[in-house]
Amino acid sequence: MRTRMYLDHAAVWPLRAEAAAAWTDAAEVAVGDPARAHAEGRASAELLERATTATAAAVGAAPDAVTWTSGGTEAVHLAVIGTARADALAGGTRRHIITSAVEHSAVLAACERLRTDHGFEVDVVDVDRSGAVDPDAVAAKLTDRTLAVHLQHANHEVGTLQPVVEVARRCRTVGALLHVDACQTVGQVGLSVEDLGADLLTASAAKFGGPRGVGFLAQGPRGRVVAVQEGDDRQRRQRAGQIDVPAVAAAAVALQVAIDGMQTEHSAREVVRRHLRTRLPDVVTDLEVHGPLADAHPGIVAVSALYVDGEALVGALDAAGFAVHSGSSCASTSGQPSHVLVAMGALTHGHVRISHGPDVTVADADRFIDAYATAVTDLRARVGR
Image (cartoon, rainbow, N blue to C red; front, side):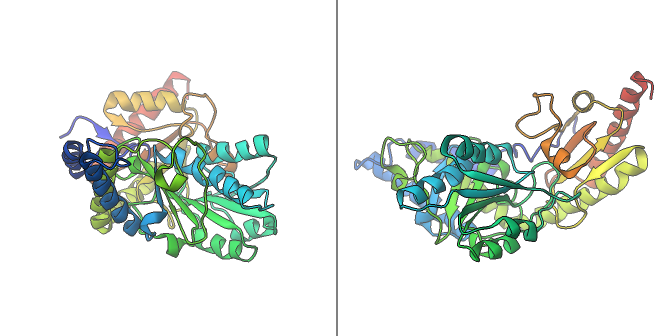
């Protein structure tokens, strides 16, 4: 029996063995700058082209529509701010964007930057108790001044899948673009740029078993961005700076492995997700399970328990051998409750996100449930509950 169980895949998926091997192999080949004309540069460029072509095919985009970034956060900023720059440089006058109240902090921060630094009007759409956006609520805010809607595919805290296809249809009626933050779903849920109706799609390799520090932006036929950082003409002048070619090669391999095993991995994770959602309320009182049973990410379960501090619960579970997460993603040390749960009107006390991989079995889940129940009972006893 393994002594520890890693249940934080929504933050960082462990590097897949195939990706690690690909990185090692690529590092021996990609010693030159792919922008250079010498033999070493050409070898790097060829490796980069193969990785880019494979990644583009995996998400249904053209190879010249994929831009590599340093991760999901940079990809999001390129999608949000780069789109605004492209419109302005083309003489456009659209200065209104729409997002939701449950977006990742990177999306919310990029939208806020457009508001404070560039005078954009930002409309934030509320969600229901399950964390889902109503497409009609988005449509009600769309105008002929709307440049883009920025909407996640799956929520990073509670796993809710958003109705992006329906939102895409409504965006088309006024000529607005749709950016889909798919960091939690690329390689985990079947998708393509065309099927989602996305004009821009962002992803992070760390979420599907690739190396950290690699992400990408894929554009549909209507998507247009201009580099947020400038300084060279790499990547069609859409993103300046060097590309970590070995890491990109590893990311492409990880994505292909994830897609090849997606059906099996999805099914295994879904069984465990439903088991956790069903059993946890049976063994712990005053517990709230967040997000919908259906239309959800297969590997995310979020629960909150009354009379328990979330960080204390994470510590107790860590000591028992289970790695989970509490609080709002990328802000767990801020002392603030999850903005996602607040927007849902859900219980924020004692919040824990369990994001399991495909190797976690029902028996493993039962071990976690026992440890969780013990930890909650002990913590409540300390405060007289």
